Image 1 (cartoon, rainbow, N blue to C red):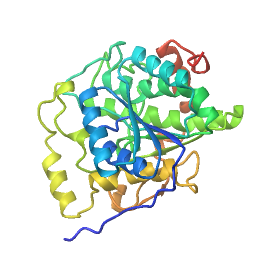
Image 2: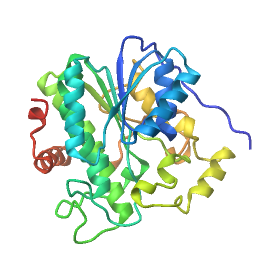
Image 3: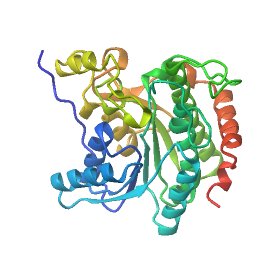
Image 4: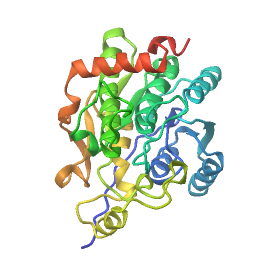
Length: 316
């Protein structure tokens, strides 16, 4: 079966500062290159400087006029997140777009971050929660669009409020789903609080569907020396154009949500094909676990307590 190429047009981003996490490989690198090609002043916060340098070289090779620079960031360390916030605030440039794209998935066993949180919850949700707090003055100055990348794993599952770190009972995929539900609730609550307090930020969500991205490949930093068992099947279906997306198409919902002038705040964008696994990006109904405003308020308050810094004080 021949695959039909799916694409969208990005607006001119000249003069606009765009920050994207997880932009040094896979789907994130494809997204970063598209943003750079659209003229953005692109900032790539990366955990691995060598990988970051290779990503910048690839972007500049394809787009010689690109404005792209690296910063240090390890989302699994609140100290690192705070340091990035301090660096960018010192630079003083308003941020116009923030794409919270980085994430980890399926470590081979229960692991914890530098701050003692379960790795997926601590990285996917808490790290980004803290990052937005530290960047809030710059986001407000740029009247930014904040797009948070969740997952089809957030369409079912729950938050285990009395065992967020999986210390009593742990299942790696339930923990991943929980991290993405929490992150999605945060993105929606960010929009509500921006409206209530006049922050001038718009916040929405995206998900990539299913594609053979680097999230599923070997991740030595997590202790996963090989791809997940389903990776080869996903590659095969993707290459044949059956149901699933590609690395290139998987990033389109986030790009649409983050840059399209018509993209709406407080909504979810994802692939529009069967099961929302692949296809053209479009607005989608919120997953049931994301629809509770009470849960969104609760995860915000819990997250503030866990990181030990009130959200509005993070940028002080």
